[in-house]
Image 1 (cartoon, helix red, strand yellow):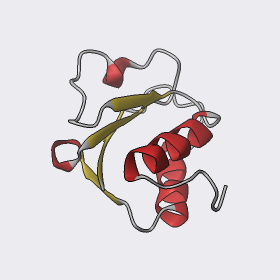
Image 2 (image 1 turned 90 degrees about the vertical axis):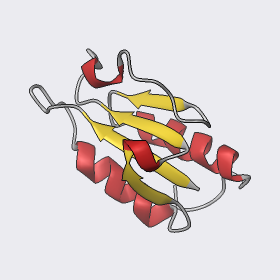
Image 3 (image 1 turned 30 degrees about the vertical axis):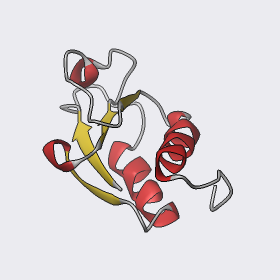
Length: 92
């Protein structure tokens, strides 16, 4: 599965946005993370609750998810595993 990632501009980040994606890459090596246009699933990583980068962008063919804080990691992990047909067990 391919996941397209779009980061916000980073004007007011409240968590390590790239660190979250690096954790996902480590926990799901079978998933390819790349540019937004390349993914079947769109993942918008926003540094704050304003979520400016996720507004108005279309979803990938498998949908989209907007993350605005570190606690969104588990939701992203579960959603991508669901789309891939995997269970939620793994390196949480």
